[in-house]
Image (cartoon, rainbow, N blue to C red; front, side):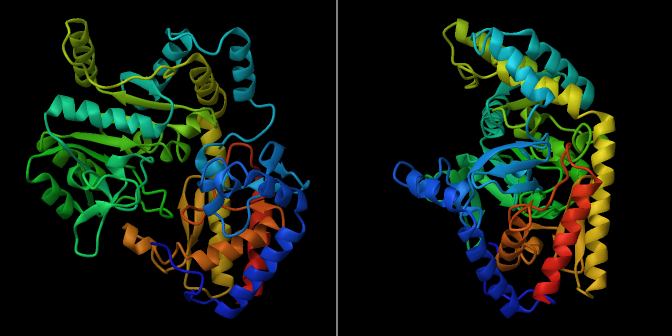
Length: 458
C-alpha cells in the first residue's frame, strides 16, 4: 500500500514537509467555514458527512463542498475557485458549465429520460464506437463496474471456465471479483472488508508486465477471462513493455479464455483509447465514466462470435432455459447514451486529443524541468494528457515499483498547498491530468505553484 505520512521522500526535508502540511491544512480549514458547517450538518445524516466514502478518505484534509463551475474551474461553498487537475478521477474530463454534454442532456430530458425501450441514441453511439475501436457490437450498463461484472458472466458462460486473472495495482470497479490481492504468504485474499472469502478462489492477481506469471496463472486451464488496463492508471502510471499486451492476448486465447481490455481510464488518454494507437486486439472492451463525463454510464464492446453467443443465451430464455445474467432496468437509457454521444462527437475528437496531448507534454516537460532544477532524483510520468511526479529515477514497470511514488505525505502536503493556491490536484494514486477545457495558462499555473511547493520543502 502507499507510504505513510512519516516516511522519507528522496531529496525532500521531511520535517519541512510535515510542518507545511500541518500549517496548510489549518489554513485551508480556517478559510472555509461554510464548507465546515455543511460537513458538520451532513455528518448528522451521512457517515463521515459524505454521500460516498471516497469523498472523505481520498484526501488528508476536509473536503470542500462544491457550488458549481465553468470550464476547467469549479468554486466551493466559500467562494474559492480551483483549476481542476483531478477531473473527478477522470470521470469529468469535459469540464463544468454550459458544455455540449450539458446541452445534450437538457434536450433529452425535455423529451424523456427513460422508457425501457431502445432509442436511436444507442444506435448512433454504437456505430461511432465501432468505427473508433473496431469492436462491432456493444452493450450498455450504468458503470464500468457493472460492465466488468457482465463481461465476467459472459466469459464464464461461453468458455465454461470459472476463474478471472487481473493484474495487481489495477482497479476495475468496486466489484467482488476484482477486489482481491495476494497476502503475505502469496495466497489470494479479499482486499477489503465485507467480501466473501470465496472471491479469492476465483480470481488470480499477477504482476503487470510479467508474462511468466500470466503463463502460470493460465496453465491449469480454468481461466474464463484475463482483464487488464492497457496501462495501469490507478497506481500512478505504469506503461506496458513493448509487445506485452499482444503476447498476453495470444496466451489468453491459447488457453481458451477471453482477453478483456478495460479502458475506463485510458479512453481519456488517447483518441480511441490506447487500443487504437497501440493496435491492440481483444475479445471484449470496457468503457465507462469519462465517456459520459459524469453521467452514469458503462459500455462494453465485443467481437461478432461473442455477440452471437450472448444472443443465443437470451434466446434460451424464451424457451424456458437459463440465459446469461446481463441487463438492468435503466441500462442503455436515452439520457446516458445522449451524453456519451455528445462527448464522443463534439469533445473527444481527434483534434481534441491532439490539443490536450500537447498540453500534457507541456506539463510533463515542466515537471521534468522542475526536478532537474532542484537536482531531485525524480522524473515525470507521461502519456498523452497524463502526467505526475515519479519519485524515483526510473519509471515503474509494476505496481510494487509505484509504491514509492504513491507517497502519502508528499502527495497530501502538495495537494492542500495547491488547493490553498487555486489548484485542485490529483488524488494520491493518480497524477495531474489535462482535460478538454484546460489551456496553456492553467498548465503554467500548475507548474508555478508546484515550484513554490518544492521551494518550501527542500
